[in-house]
Length: 191
Ligand SMILES: N[C@@H](CCC(=O)N[C@@H](CS)C(=O)NCC(=O)O)C(=O)O
Image (cartoon, rainbow, N blue to C red; front, side, top):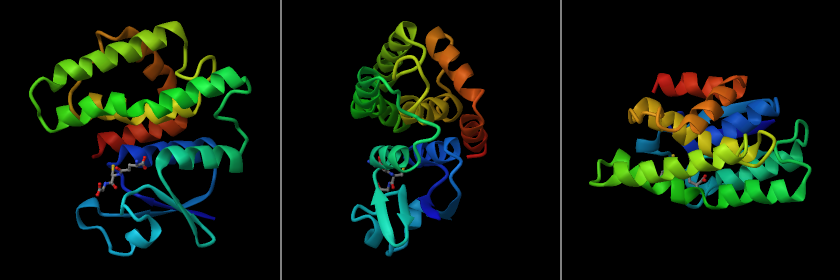
């Protein structure tokens, strides 16, 4: 069985929670207190960060790498499209994800001008979702899972209004039809 070293408030862990739920993988969760991390977590990940998954004493950190691992280890249902171009697009979105989250964290820290920078990123995301229904193209998958934890947290925890971004709102509505994503929304509401 897979063990997930997890923290409820962590959006990177949320990626892994959603991917595991989509693939209906049985998982044992170990909650890590981020403000008082156990020393042994550094043995599982040299950076001390979560998420980390563990399987038969083999450990793997880094949410983007974990998502790819889960896709290969549990190919059904697929979370990457069959079309190589769509797979590449999904990977590109995930690769560039930091551009989206930098202003999110600046906003969370209350930095001057962060709201404007975050609005620019939301406008970019909105434009992408006007062109295609899902971030990776024609089907839901890893790219959507990679972004949605921050959008849920921006809306609920930072009070970011999404009315100005109709394509994001439509995407979110479609995402929340999925039990794995709806469960994450419930978790965020309890943070
Ligand atoms: N690049 C890592 C980032 C993970 C990360 O930053 N996790 C945070 C919690 S959301 C953490 O463990 N922070 C503790 C720290 O930075 O010391 C991933 O994608 O898994």
